[in-house]
Length: 589
Image (cartoon, rainbow, N blue to C red; front, side, top):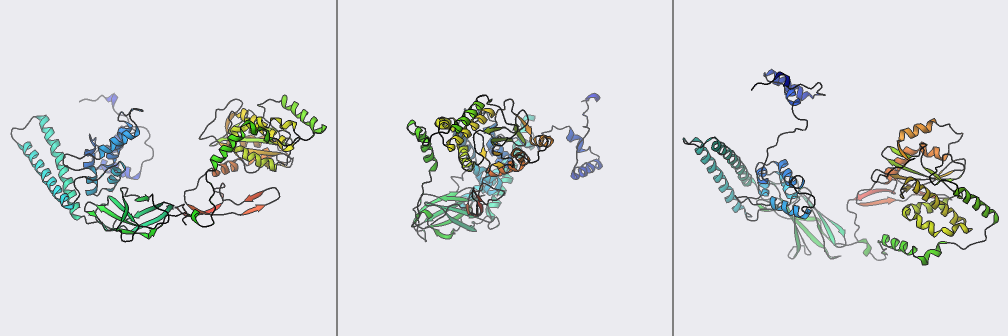
């Protein structure tokens, strides 16, 4: 076949960095007079990987001990096998896969037999994870020995018959010759597989006892069993464990037993036990030769219990969320609406004139107008961030609104504002409940009504009710400004930006801040912008969770007239200083 010179494959201009192994391989190939493999690799598709044989059935991949192909076949039906969404439920698919992985071959074997007798641990884990079970017919060592001898003899006869047919004078045509070659290859591989399985079976002994069995109390009615077995402690692949428990040390009366098929992390949770009754636990290992001797747990026995059973312990109700929700629903009822107000007092003329001037100012103020300069007052700012971008206004400043008629000494109001952050959705209802607060002389109610008004204005401006988490302290400057800050990470739940709001990189916001004229003293807004990176990092660390377990914590306080401060770790500022004692979080009696 002739090839046109114009259509010759072109070598790409840049191959990028080449490893020393590839250079050595290319040089060795060229010295042998062959073409370099680099040129051949450039003509191959970019996503081409190592070629894997195509198996028509799961048994073909199991007989070839191809773990990757078995894993692909067990998941391919779910991804690419035409199981459209809504066509079959997840449970139906799991049943279909479990039936395939436990199909008995025409020679009386199941896939788990091949993995166990070839001592292929990765293949065993893939099959057991898919729900593979042991052979329901072959259980005794004598039965296995006879079965393997028969399979080796069968494979040998099949190989001899195929060879005789190929060497026959009046052989079949080309297609028949190809079929005979294929069958000869299949039975040759099967004979090698069966010989390997028989040899491993003959060299396998009964498994020894597990190295250690740990027993933990995990609740008032359950125990947790953890098994450890070293890889070189016995010959043969362990395929399962048996856990037995009893109330007597001699195990004459066994309460129950269970089998653990996950040999990578063999654990079992014993549930339904009687509180305070000691249970003894032992564990045995299994391979193709049978069950090995049991190993007792350490400690030998344990009684399910809880620290709540101790004398003098007051049991507090743990369902606080339901109680709080019930109280919130009750406060929404009309008969509780009047209890939101304090007793009215006569209002002085000066307070009336101040309220009227503030009300007129609010009437002519735009709902979406943000504050640019702080002028000795109390303000509310929100920081919405998504990775390294910040939501800013048209002036590329953080959204800030003023809290009118609010005193700069807002220690008590700040604590109430922190509680309000747990119910951003209830701001309209709270405003309605405190609608008559403006006619009251209570400064406390007036301050809270003004805080609600500023929160509602900010929610309407940014287009979302969730303003995030309140920063743990207000920012103050020497000009008398107080800035309350809320922060929210919008990566998981992005918001739709509306003009004049837009996203800008954090570095750009800092750069714009450095270009503005410097004031003699930095304002609270300057402090927030200069420390924005640290505050974002603090907010991200505050959202982390610790791993489950039993911890011991230290409470260290530093109290002043206005507040109480506690010592927390830098990596997890939402928790006290702590150290994990163990993974088991339950505290027994």
